[in-house]
Image 1: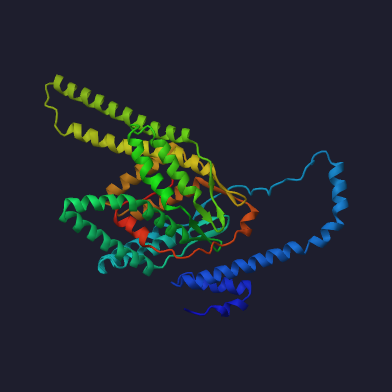
Image 2 (image 1 turned 30 degrees about the horizontal axis):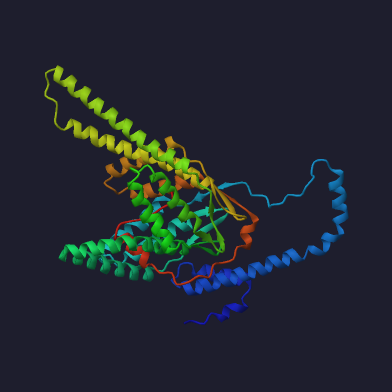
Length: 425
């Protein structure tokens, strides 16, 4: 283990300079040590700034008191610190910059038979986080590629073992399937914890504190029980999942708090289903009319007509219904979530804009055979940043770093290999 005590005598400015030089290196332990020292010196600096004006405050007490008493406008002093005007999240990423990263990542991953994919993931995440700005500060992604590579190797070994064992015997396959069901909540919690702890903002990391038994209920038991309600309880399950994730995320020592409404999730879910049903019924009626017209004209209707219309309808439903659900739930989730005394959030996604984003992205991807993927990712990220606002409170300066350790990438990579993921909204 390296000795970092030489940093103890550094000034705050020297520590920040030293941390800046380590941003692109793979030394998370040293970076953590520097972050802790920076946080300590920043708190000490703020304390000294608060103590200095205290002596002058007493001399102004009488004057201020008289001013307040003689004024009819201000009766009581504000009990809470004022929130800064909400500012939009700014994304600085450019398609040309990300395209060069993307193409190099693909080529090197192919040449190295997938080994470089761990470095590719870190490069991509660092680019998107480093180009996302809130209140004048940018995010950082702190994962170590070696850490991710080890997780992927373990995940791949488990996946191959799972496949081989299940193909040998039906009984073993059933036992492994049951084991898999009970392992999913643990893997999701580990994945969320890893992903959160690898994100930093203002020298403070995020974290996730969800527990296994609670996750088992939320991710497995409740969805299974919703089957017996003919999925009428599914919107309530989706609301519970979002609340579980959100309320267990923390920024330093401060937890996120959400106040979600089940009625909004029912509106989003049933609205999306209703849109889909109406569109499919309209497509079937249109197909019937078209075929009847061709028959009356004594023309043989093509057998490919109905499948084409059905496929086009399916894509339209996927885009429009998905956009409706995302718009309603995302706006509700952000507008009803806060870090008390630290920050509040706002989302104002509009349905036409989101539909156009998804539709145009799909068309461009199909026309370019996937080569426009970097443009799509940059465009989508920029869109969601523009419709998101964050109001920052002065209390953010007092957040203390969470010193929990022991995070690893195994759960995250197993989640990817077994093809399941979870996300808010």
